[in-house]
Length: 149
Image 1 (tube, rainbow, N blue to C red):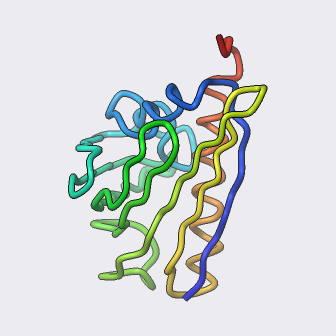
Image 2: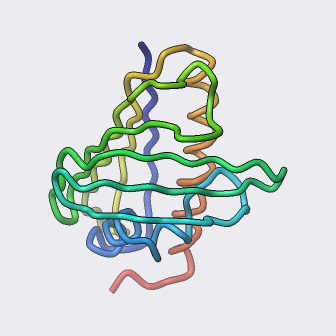
């Protein structure tokens, strides 16, 4: 098994970033690796609650993931299971991996540390890294023109 970790700085308070990570409206603004739309975002951001997100990429392919919230600490940390319902890497069919997201207040806003662990292969890790990098860059861009205060 393998994992990836990405770090970004976002010009928004941790509470605002947390909302973007846990609400359907927030997720619709950044989920997915390219400019394709989020078609469905369902969340129940509490321990034991579930999420489901479906998005379409610019090449027309659709991907859907689901999981359970394992740890929810308002404005600080999210831990959730992750599984592809459709699309995604074939190596991950039927596999459940783990996402950990830590938010840290910094002078410029929030530092987000995003880890996707328990991926089955190096190829899957590389593909997920490209996908999450694109999504997190969209999240950063979502707040780049807004004030922190």
